[in-house]
Length: 194
Length: 194
DNA sequence: TGTCAAACGAAGGGAGGCCTGCGCTAAAGT
DNA sequence: ACTTTAGCGCAGGCCTCCCTTCGTTTGACA
Image (cartoon, rainbow over all chains, first blue to last red):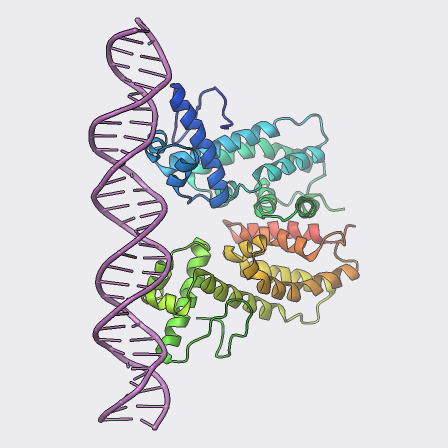
C-alpha cells in the first residue's frame, strides 16, 4: 500500500500527481508498492518491466504514470522519507539522549533492507536533496539537543552519525539480535565519552 | 595486475586454474583485473561483456577461463581476500587494542569501494565461506586478545565487529576526514566501556 | 443510460547481454 | 623450420529490457 494518503503531493523536482480516476489511482498505488519492494530487493537499477509485472499492470501504464525511472524512484523515495519523518515526529517527552537513540533506532529498523535510502544518502545526488533535507530536519535537532546536554560527543556532525547508523542498517543481518548488538556498539560510539 | 603471483591456486569450491600458455595467461590476468574494477564499480551483477571489453578480450575468452559468473566472481573475491590477509599479517608488536584498531583500519581502507566484499560477508552465501574463514582467521584473534586484555567489550562477537566496521566501509564518503570521524565513532563503540 | 475523454493492454522495434559453434592464428615443443 | 593443438575472435541465436504506438475498454459525469 502506498504510504501517501489521499492528500496531494506538493514537491520540488520531478512532480508526479496521483490520478483521479479510480482505476488509474489503483494502478498508481500498485505500481508504487511494487516499485518500493522491487527497488528494496534489487536496488535502484531493477527492471521496470518487472515492477509493472509485479503490480499486475502493463509496462505502458507504468510509463504513463512515471515518464522516467527517475520519476518513479523519486516518488518512492520521498514517500519513504515522509513516512520516516512522521515516525520521528513523536518524541514523547524523552530526555536528550533517549530521544536521539529512539529516533536512530527507528531510522535503522525502518531503513533496513532499504538499500536505496542508503545509497541515496551516500551518493548525494541532486534528486535526493529534498529527502536529505527532510531527514536532517527530523533528526538533527535531536543530535544537537543531546550534544548540548553533554550526552552525545561533540566532535561529529549529524551527517557523520547518519553515516554510521546507516551503515548498520545497510547490512543484511541473519538474526535480529545481531542487529541489536551492532547498533548498540554504534550508539556507544556516538555517546559522549565517560 | 592480478595479485596472485606465479603460484598455483589451491582452493575449495569453483577452482579456476591460471593457464600455462603466455597469451592465455596474459588474457587471464587482464580479465581478472578488469573484473575486479568493474565489480567494484558496478556490483556483482555487472555485464560480463563489459568486463571482456575492458580487458581488451573477446567474450568467448572470458567464458573459456571462467565458465560461469560464479567462477569469475569467486576468483576475484578470493584474490582480494588473500591480499587483505597478507596485509593483516603484520602485527608488528602492537598492544592488544592497537593491533585490533590497526587491522580494522586497514580492513576499512582496503574494503572501501569494494562493495562486493561487503555484500559477500552480509549475504553469507556458500561461495564466500572460504573468504569469510580467511578474514576470521586474520582478525578474530586480534579481537579476542583485546577482549582478554579488557580493552574491547566482551558482549559482541567478531562477526558483530565486522558488521559495524564493514558498514562504515560501505559508505561513499565525500571526504577522507569524514570517514575518519565515522570510523572513530565505530571504534569507540567497540572499546570496552569506562 | 448515454457520451466521451481518460486510461488500458497488446504488440513490436531497437539495444544490449548471455552463451555457443566454428574456422583461423600463433605459441610450444621437437 | 615444422607440426601440433591450445587458444583466439567472429558471428549469430536467444533472451530480456526499454520505450512507443495504436486500437479497445471503462470509469466519470450529465
